[in-house]
Image (cartoon, rainbow over all chains, first blue to last red; front, side, top):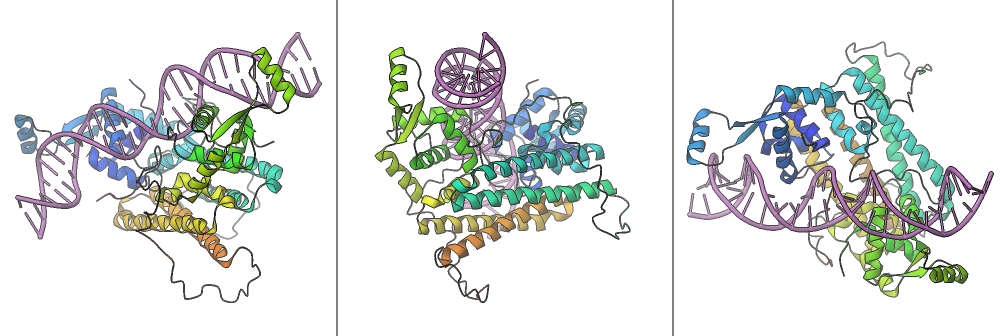
Length: 236
Length: 236
DNA sequence: TCGTTCATGTAACGCGTTACATGATTGC
DNA sequence: GCAATCATGTAACGCGTTACATGAACGA
């Protein structure tokens, strides 16, 4: 039951939940569903598929239609392999979907999680969106602080880079705000009164720090391989 | 002369060009100068410093002030190590600065390159900015194409993700346009006439495909470890 | 028949991380 | 005297890539 943890496993299970596929097509779907975020090579995909099979989440099926398959097996040739999600695999995916640990809203995971929001329950969606938002706000705070401390020592280009970076983050926060609001609004009763935008009452907005807890894989489990966040220590 | 290639080497040389530092401080500067983009751990930094020393780009100096250093050496204790750029190191950095190969404007490199624009010649800056822009435009084109082909098969969330991703890219393109324009304008003679924005004549805009060439390390040399770009194959 | 796309894999390697180990300096 | 921070390093590992090897199916 090797872990082979993370993002690829999640995405593969998610895509196969919709319909069985063989590796080649899986990769294509991976790269369009996840859009701008992440692309995977066969060098990652096929080994991953293997361990998923070994774990019992998937089964390999012969390429569609009997004739082809039979011919292939007889001749010892390599046939197309279609991967199908097993019941355990479905369960596993459901379990992963319900995780709302901190890493669900880290840079690398958030995109994939979002891509499968269609299969995600409303309250999990909310937790993930809000988690991401407070993560970004935390980031913004650090950036602002560090910028205030060092601005005069930085040249124009560095400053501009910083500025643009902050604006990007701010923009994502606004995006999240819209999503959260429309999520709250219901996503079924459309055509609301639509009178005033921005009701002054936006009280229950944040559940900021103690959100990590009732969570199956609570460990900090920092993402392996990327941007661990400029975090703490800044130039003195 | 091991490679230990890339981004960290570049950033370290660049920071040390400004002033000597020891590892600990270097890391802090790394994480603020490069801002939102990338953070490095000591596990990467110290080994990197070692190979840079081995290559002769840096020398290790005893921590500042004689007394401390002497005491340290006598007692066999470990003293602070200050790293200083050698002449060869300076040359090396200059050489790296002048590289305008395709990877200079890939996601992982561009930020760092930009952060050191203060030390970069105007025409290199231009090439990097324009390279990045056409890279992003190429990306946009692919996204639009793939989106047109698959839009009805995607659920709302996937679509929204795609949309937001495209907007992010478009935004960066606009940013680059401004930078390029102000770069062209001179960056010294400010307060220009400022009459019409968008002159119909924007002729020499792109040098799109054959730009890779007169470049010291011309190999495709795709970034190791990240987003190779959704690229080519999209869902059929 | 030949080139392109489909299709499946393996091996070596790159880049960076976390976890660990160790010790000096500073301030209360 | 003790904690926090400064400071330097190593080893194991994670995740993903590129390069390579192999072969089938399809169309002009």
